[in-house]
Image (tube, rainbow, N blue to C red; front, side):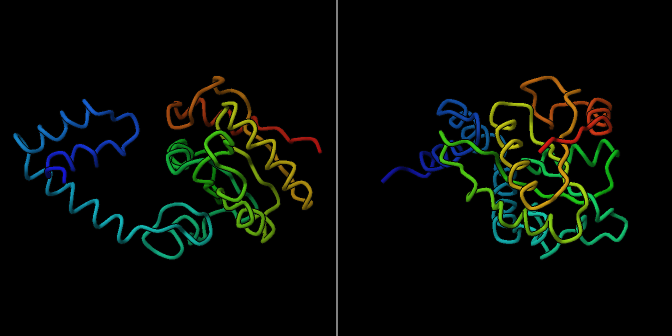
Length: 197
């Protein structure tokens, strides 16, 4: 059976971009210099995994059945912006250029990684879009997978008679929304264009 240190090193490797050496450095740092930080991290992870779930409407992380954004009466219910990840939603909110509702896919179509339409809860997206939405804005990243996801979603939603647009390509190709400055993101959203059927 592996030692407790080996178990911690292996557990830290689940984080993106953390290999064996980085996990080992983190483990030794926490054990040698910051045991209090390690305990806080353990408690925070336990609390988050116990209490955080998905919003029933937008699929974003939430501690309540319906998140604050979906529950707000100040949001425009006629617009639904589809993003890949919660970090993308956060960037949209920080840009302060959009006042509609959201749907978070929690990923993108990526057959090589085993992520298809079923894994992205697209039935929930269609149901949400049909509720009161006049326009669905696709704000997936401008990557190969993001473009493929946008193309698939536009066909799926337009088949239901839903108006679909895509944020403008004011963003650099290959970039992630969470890495873009607010001004560029705001401009891309303002210059979105309709996707022809």
